[in-house]
Length: 587
Picture (spheres, one colour):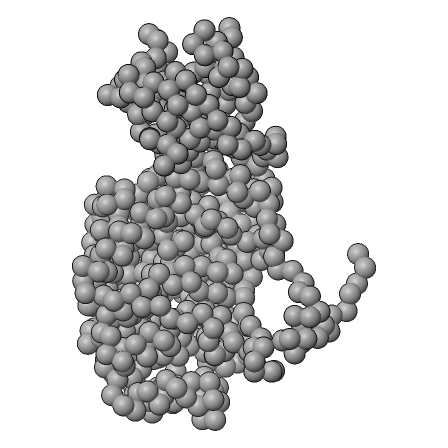
């Protein structure tokens, strides 16, 4: 080894020891001819000292050092002078008096600072990612990610799971997002797809008798990007045989409790469960943030009794009027800002009334009789000195709009405690969702989720009522993963495929291997995919998963560092039986 210790290891217990350290020059300071260097590696910082009276040749070499030079130093550990210790560093009581130095690698002046206090813009960070990753915060983030994954692997192994890798080159099958495709050289005109998830293969593994499977799986989807989405992401993928939904949820809840306990020393509360309908009614979202109350209330039947035309029209046309009470008085200009916010997210407006000792006040209060006002105040548990806000629209849209207003209020009123983590389960999802654009029914999660027993025989006749044996895990208002009990009857699977527009021929062309496998005895099974990137990001207090991925893409799905994607040589195009058909436009 070129070093005896790391730069984050030595303390006063090592005084007088001869040691060798290797690392990067984080900073260099010359104090009256004595050169001090903070030497950095991923473990920490150690101060090393070059004194001209101790070793003139070594001191002369130290004068050549610049930031980010890689050096090896050998010397003896000594205590720092009185009043010169640094309590912020683990190594802050000691320093190394250097006897020998070797410059292992020189560095040009870095184009970005290796400093958490001076963070470069996103494009520069991604272009020089190898420098950005040297920053302590990025090193800690990836070390923390490693610890999370290691803890999870240990948990899976303790519960008799087998880690099995599934293919990265697979058949293209419709799973919701666009596939990344790979042309086959030896099969002209044919393509592999990169997996959006290991979904079909883990089901095949259950049919194969591996009753507890897991994988730290890479998943690739060609979709538009945002802070919590990348072309490639990583998930804990798991599948279990001979289980119920409750069994899988209990296992996963235990997994997260172990992860949080071992990595953050946090003991999580039990995860409450909400039905999809309950979650939409109370929080306006199927991924609710339950760190604060501020629940929605359906007041449609109360306001139906008023003379306010907007509410009456919505109520009589089958819509819903949702109300939210922030339990705080707001100035008129603040209310106007919330009206503008609601309009910006697609609402026609936001009605409001102020609660006073005498009742409700606003320009619409006159349309509400005293008895209706009392009903509203009682329903909202509203106290004088607060505001009640109303969103009226179609049932689902009114819930979603009010849910976004709820999040905006929580942010503005600072209702969320920093460092708080609240998980919940959402179950009893609809099996199908209606696509207004195409006027067709689509799977809510995916087509391999089984309907609840009472809907199996006639789901085609009442798709809007059908509930699936499927569920989501949510943390702080962010969906971490989805799970379901799978369809194991090939005839039922074909019925579901046919209902969402995949006919018998197409079903067997795309999914024949799965349908055939179930003919030979498939166990009852189910599982989940749990986002590792999102989990780690939230645990570290950020919503941007790029902060916990070593080499992420930018918003254009490009990597400024290696300049991917890029063109390939004409020779490769011919080998792959491809030709360019792109109209080039001059900018």
